[in-house]
Image 1 (cartoon, helix red, strand yellow):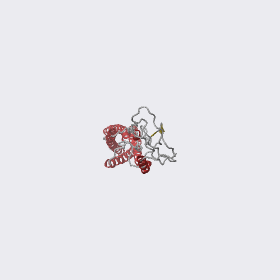
Image 2 (cartoon, helix red, strand yellow):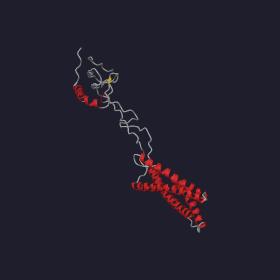
Image 3 (cartoon, helix red, strand yellow):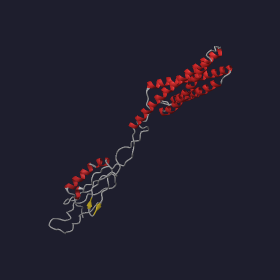
Image 4 (cartoon, helix red, strand yellow):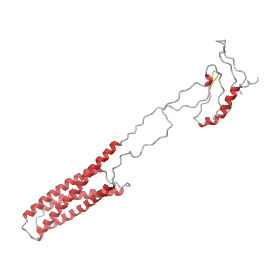
Length: 299
């Protein structure tokens, strides 16, 4: 028995499948053809799984936009100048306090000087420690930015309060000492009077410097918080469904048409012989006649 020759439509379909073989390989993977109850299904592209898109993964930014500290070059220079002045003023307060204590002990009444020096030295020492920490932070930072302004608010407030207390106590003792020993024109008395006035003046200067730094730190903190609140971004991972095209009925399964041979797929080994032309399962004129079995054989 010889194999039935394929019709012209079958040969044309076979030629089209050969020409489109390379194009099909460049697309999504194809499913192998299946035969069920004599019907041949065309090869179709594998659908994209539900919930998965074709986009690339975008990693989260390492730094949230707007979280950086507000920076101004002009204010940075002014701040360095004020902090340097604070270091100099604090060093002068320590020097005057030590000299005042030494001469007061020689004069014979050092108790008042000890109180003034204790309060003023506390403010000056705290100012020195915090300023040195700020300079170290500036040196260690790659962006040349110091400590966060929120920390400056708390520390500068403490320095301002202690400096105001020292200036108040020093002013009261300086006025009282001047009134009490106004008629005493000895060298030691004049020296103590001058040292007390100088200590009071530098205590006021230290208070002004750190009060300015405190106000500026409050403004800078408010700016940073407002910027972060306006630019805050929240990343939420939500599975987004990907729309898929509806499956269509193959052309060869439309009622009244004959099945066509499968397309040759280069992904699978072997050769699929074309299917011989078969008559309709229910020819016209008969409603319940069985389909004519296919003639020929498969290679």
